[in-house]
Amino acid sequence: MPLSLTDINENKLAEFGNHILAIFLSDKTTKRNIIWATKDYEALGEEYHSKYPITMDLITGRNAGVIQPRVLKGKENRISRTKGKAEVFTPAWICNQQNNLLDRAWFGKDSVFNVEGDKTWHTNEKIIVFPRKNGLGWRDYVDARRLEITCGEAPYLTSRYDMATGESIPIYNRIGLLDRKLRVVNENTSSIDEWVKWAMRALESVYGFEFQGDSLLIARENILYTFIENMQYKFHTEPDAVQLRRAANIIAWNVWQMDGLTYTVPFGAVEEQYEQMALENIKSPEKDLYCKALYCKIHDWRSKKTLLFKSLVEREKL
Image (cartoon, rainbow, N blue to C red; front, side, top):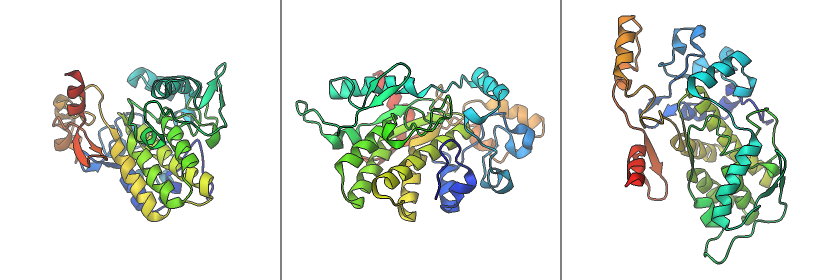
């Protein structure tokens, strides 16, 4: 199956089975669908209102291609989103520099995965060696939890393509946090069963949240395809239906829709906007749900507990 790097058409995703796309459209906090949370699509009809849910029929079939990565959107649309939601997609070389800072702290040395150049990088081809002095090994690196805030299409988690230019990046040269974890898994496992175990743990260790529903869906898709492409790269085969469903469920939990200022689902703390909608006779099945301050839930896979993201932030402030 050929994989499109820059734009994952939702019809292609549906080839895995509608259940995968259904999972990616789900919101684990509300137990309903994620919402558009952007006015960019409202000209397409009432169903595309910013506070309405994204449903499968709106983005597949004859509507496939409605959602596109930022680099493929029109210039006017990109400028509007930058002004409206401060949506800026960082070039891959900057993502690499910042991810390298994290690895410098973890490994205690520079240039572990690559050597930085002038707006580029040169990948280290030797197997990654883990420091013995702190007693941490490759499994600890895979399990180390990482969060990308306001993640957009998740360029810091996976660099399938340069978010600024749309240029595809081959697996061996990728620089995302998940990309690095999967490289380590590729280098330290030999059987498919062991690879799947640690690739899943890598998925469980990376998190991200995003306000706008279209970017969130793209981020989820990019992470799933990163998982698929790495299995293809390592074993020349693809995940089976059970593995895909498990991976998709992890991703739907770990990459979620949230207002980063309130820690709630989008519009979840703004009742007045819904009162205004009611006066304009806009009927929304989600109205009662999103009028409440619904704090977003996330899952800790190691402790097997579901908790409020807000509680983690408050704990860090203590």
